[in-house]
Amino acid sequence: MGEFGYVHGVEIWLEVHGGPTQVPEVAAEIMRATKHQNVGLCWNSNPTDVANGSVKAAFDLLRPWLKSCHINELVSGYPYRELFALMKKSGYDRWTLCECAESKEPARFLKYYRALWMELQRG
Image (tube, rainbow, N blue to C red; front, side, top):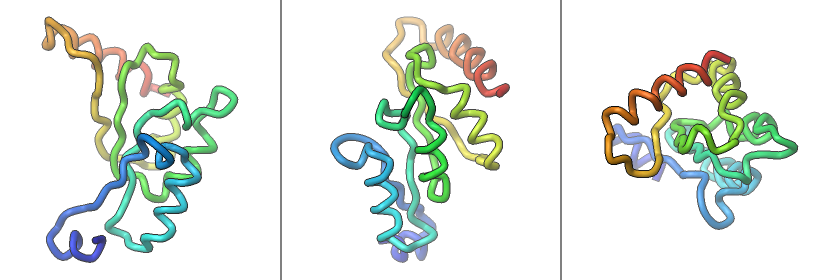
């Protein structure tokens, strides 16, 4: 799949999400098996990323393949400030995709969500 996507200008992303693939070690094992630069991961901000309050070990393990990142409720207690600092330090220059509950005032909600995102990414 990696070569097919490469030829057609499409990256192949495995989302680190659900079942066994949400376990960082399992996702890393899958990525090692792909052996293709065009195949990467989408970080999903799962509780399984966190060990002793930190995402550093999971991030360090999965960073070589990180192509995208889903973030959800920024006030959930997930260590986003640490994640954003690790992303910045590693040179991650791609998107973080907002996944959160529906709002009755989406424009207003996204304004506040962006402000919180900016604060958390300051490191």
